[in-house]
Amino acid sequence: MSSVKDVISQFIKDNFITGRSTVLLDGSLSLIDSGIMDSTGVLELVEFLEATYAITIEDEDLVPENLETIDNMVAFLKTKGIT
Image (tube, rainbow, N blue to C red):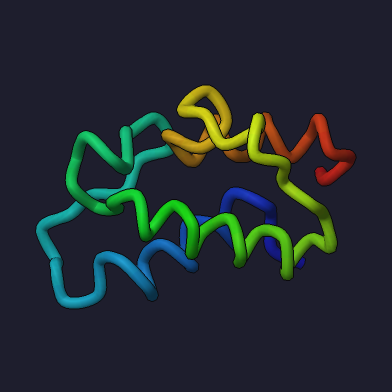
């Protein structure tokens, strides 16, 4: 079984950095500041997380502290009971 971090990393690799071999995806890398994702990408990511983990992410949860890095997402999902 893949870890939450692995699942998120694979989704980002498959959907946002395909063909960009120079990108090193690190858990603490800001996905917005690095140009990997834009605001539309964040919405795609939220849809993926909701579908994959059968959760609802509220509007007030759409903040950088929860979604800016892979590490932030893993910590946020833990608050939703996903480990």
